[in-house]
Image (tube, rainbow, N blue to C red):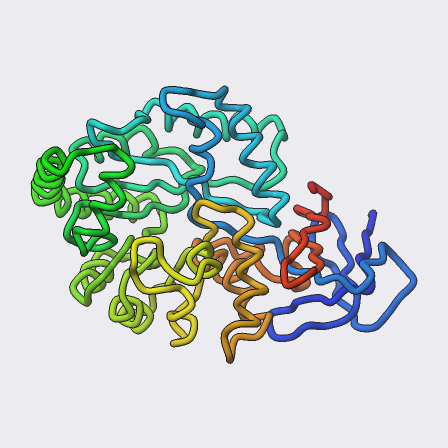
Length: 378
């Protein structure tokens, strides 16, 4: 029975940082010991943290559709995405798949199914460095949302679904000015066209959102798919989420919603780019503010894979009361527990040997080595 020993590391355990070694046997953590040793691979005092668990990343789409009307080979896109997340220390990733499109969408449900099939094919062929699951981002205001869900309803890789509504005047875009700044620039609209666009989105939301939320929540509960809310802004939004059996509150936009979500027992998830940048690009509540109020449980890289490991070391330095083990838990144990992956997320005997060696230079983490189930993948 082969054993690998990673020695002389600063090991970030759930409640302390221990200088010592980790022994790996058959892909599982076999022992954690304190003190220096001459046995095994010398990590020279670098940090050893659990492999990061990413619940919400839109990053894959950028590899598949790098330019308007350009489509890359889906397997090649998956491999490029996988390489980038793995070398950022992410050993478990939930790839976001869009469900529900408006008429101006640049990708179809067929594109999404192709990407999901490419992930599954690559997992079977052992091409991937990280472990991949699917996260369905369900735009409940879109007329075709439930039809899109049917393409994934029995896919075993689907472990998480978020219910979201990006119509103007609510949630992420409660301020119409923020919506205008985002969409008028993105879609190159005149003010007249933009107003018509807003009216249509608002009408679709009123017509579709409530029924789609109820139907998708029921379908997910029947299949054991964990549910997340998205961009909750008010107590009423949180009450609705609780009634629908939501377990994760993604990107609450106000302190009120984050506090209500936390008090209701939901895991509060925010974007690592928000934390690193110091604020929300939409002008909503910042991740750092939630951390300072003790209302932050999970971080997600969202659209920049490296921001996840970067946020860990920034958070432990910038916010009083958050030690390094607490920050590490937000990108490993907490997200793993939120979606029922009890076999990973912490450096403990019996857990998967998903591990990341990190050195910090000039306050920036450098990912030096990544192991998934004891096998070096980066």
